[in-house]
Image 1 (cartoon, rainbow, N blue to C red):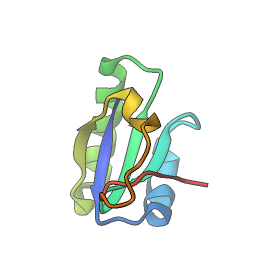
Image 2 (spheres, one colour):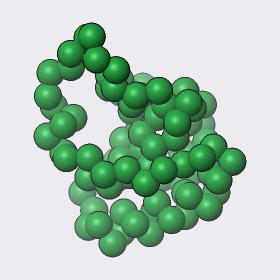
Image 3 (spheres, helix red, strand yellow):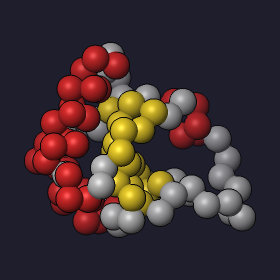
Image 4 (tube, rainbow, N blue to C red):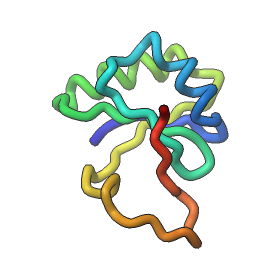
Length: 89
Protein backbone atom coordinates (compact mmCIF):
# COMPACT_ATOMS: atom_id res chain seq x y z
CA UNK A 1 0.00 0.00 0.00
CA UNK A 2 1.32 3.42 -0.92
CA UNK A 3 1.17 6.57 1.16
CA UNK A 4 3.04 9.34 2.91
CA UNK A 5 4.82 9.61 6.23
CA UNK A 6 4.91 12.86 8.20
CA UNK A 7 7.76 12.52 10.70
CA UNK A 8 7.24 14.07 14.12
CA UNK A 9 3.70 15.23 13.26
CA UNK A 10 1.15 13.94 15.81
CA UNK A 11 -1.86 12.13 14.39
CA UNK A 12 -4.38 14.80 15.44
CA UNK A 13 -2.43 17.58 13.75
CA UNK A 14 -1.80 15.47 10.64
CA UNK A 15 -5.47 14.54 10.32
CA UNK A 16 -6.44 18.22 10.31
CA UNK A 17 -3.77 19.01 7.71
CA UNK A 18 -4.52 16.24 5.24
CA UNK A 19 -8.30 15.81 5.53
CA UNK A 20 -9.11 18.42 2.82
CA UNK A 21 -6.77 16.62 0.39
CA UNK A 22 -7.71 12.97 0.98
CA UNK A 23 -10.66 10.66 0.51
CA UNK A 24 -12.79 9.22 3.30
CA UNK A 25 -11.34 5.74 2.65
CA UNK A 26 -7.71 6.84 3.09
CA UNK A 27 -6.14 5.72 6.36
CA UNK A 28 -4.42 7.99 8.84
CA UNK A 29 -2.46 6.10 11.49
CA UNK A 30 0.17 6.81 14.09
CA UNK A 31 3.42 5.30 12.82
CA UNK A 32 6.89 5.37 14.37
CA UNK A 33 7.43 8.96 15.58
CA UNK A 34 4.88 10.56 13.28
CA UNK A 35 1.83 9.87 11.15
CA UNK A 36 1.29 7.73 8.06
CA UNK A 37 -1.38 8.46 5.46
CA UNK A 38 -2.16 5.34 3.42
CA UNK A 39 -4.13 5.07 0.18
CA UNK A 40 -5.83 1.66 0.06
CA UNK A 41 -7.81 0.26 -2.85
CA UNK A 42 -6.16 2.34 -5.55
CA UNK A 43 -3.59 1.37 -8.15
CA UNK A 44 -0.02 2.60 -7.55
CA UNK A 45 -0.37 5.23 -10.28
CA UNK A 46 -3.32 6.84 -8.48
CA UNK A 47 -1.53 6.62 -5.13
CA UNK A 48 1.49 8.38 -6.67
CA UNK A 49 -0.72 11.21 -7.96
CA UNK A 50 -2.27 11.68 -4.51
CA UNK A 51 1.18 11.52 -2.88
CA UNK A 52 2.61 14.05 -5.31
CA UNK A 53 -0.20 16.50 -4.54
CA UNK A 54 0.31 16.07 -0.78
CA UNK A 55 4.12 16.27 -1.03
CA UNK A 56 3.74 19.73 -2.53
CA UNK A 57 1.15 21.01 -0.07
CA UNK A 58 2.88 19.56 3.03
CA UNK A 59 6.47 20.47 2.11
CA UNK A 60 7.12 22.30 5.40
CA UNK A 61 6.40 19.06 7.33
CA UNK A 62 9.14 17.05 5.56
CA UNK A 63 6.78 14.44 4.05
CA UNK A 64 8.23 11.15 2.82
CA UNK A 65 6.79 8.66 0.35
CA UNK A 66 5.84 5.44 2.14
CA UNK A 67 5.20 1.92 0.89
CA UNK A 68 3.83 -0.67 3.33
CA UNK A 69 2.89 -4.30 2.83
CA UNK A 70 -0.86 -4.44 3.44
CA UNK A 71 -0.60 -7.36 5.87
CA UNK A 72 1.76 -5.34 8.09
CA UNK A 73 -1.30 -3.46 9.29
CA UNK A 74 -2.75 -6.66 10.76
CA UNK A 75 0.28 -8.19 12.42
CA UNK A 76 0.44 -8.22 16.24
CA UNK A 77 2.31 -5.26 17.67
CA UNK A 78 5.30 -5.86 19.90
CA UNK A 79 4.89 -3.38 22.81
CA UNK A 80 8.69 -3.22 23.19
CA UNK A 81 9.16 -2.03 19.60
CA UNK A 82 8.55 1.43 18.18
CA UNK A 83 6.29 1.80 15.21
CA UNK A 84 3.05 1.06 16.98
CA UNK A 85 -0.03 1.65 14.93
CA UNK A 86 -2.95 3.69 16.21
CA UNK A 87 -6.04 4.43 14.14
CA UNK A 88 -7.25 8.01 13.81
CA UNK A 89 -10.71 8.46 15.28
